[in-house]
Length: 375
Image (cartoon, rainbow, N blue to C red):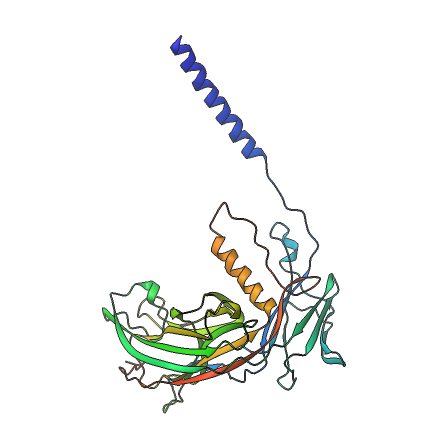
């Protein structure tokens, strides 16, 4: 009797397994082919006058333009016809309560256009501005933005510069400036910057950025000129915040892809640290950040100073990046809930924001080993 029950149980298990496998193999789910929409992303800092041109030896690159809005039309991977599609009869304009301030038109098919806002176009804090875009095969989009006030002034509390030694660096560390991986001890140039700003308006939202300014070279093949965004980490803070990639901003890095075989160049996204003013527990927000901006053979006259940038952003921009942060945080969780990406683009997707900024200049003085690319 026991053997019969055992055989019956085994048979049921095999039958159920075959049935489940057949169901999984035959059932496929497809999302409906949704209508295409225009997408727009633009974080425009109206106070940014920095020229992000970098020259490293024989390589020159313009990293970013601070007043630009990127457009594209949405598509779904299941329907590949949208992958190579371009915008047709694309039009875009910026206006205020008195009328149009800026108009951009193109009748030529355009692939993911980037509209650069003229530097001479002026905006006023507290005023509303209206953005409108249209394209032949997608619904019109619009956005309404109120320019925030200038952020409060920043105060430098301390600046610590030092060199650290990384023992036996791996390929994953071959991403910073002038890495000499033949040396088993890789020297990293590092700075800690502690600063604060008063919490004058708890209803404000901020983004913190770091910029490195490179000194002019004395030689034709110079080590570096211009300015470059730098990524950083937060060592200490009295205020909760989060990191997210800031769209439209890039950081330029020199790296050794195969460890000393040659020097390469690449761009990476810039990470900004976002803060909700209502979360600042005291009258002052204090942060200490850490940046590692050179590895290996260090140039004594590379970075001459930093710009710690505090940027006032609209609430819509803060919520947009907060939703992206939450989405990325939960992307590997199979039991996660759906995360809606916030934005202010009506009729489409994305975020368009006008921002204001204030910089804190931090000078440094370090020396290091001289790098010569010809020896």
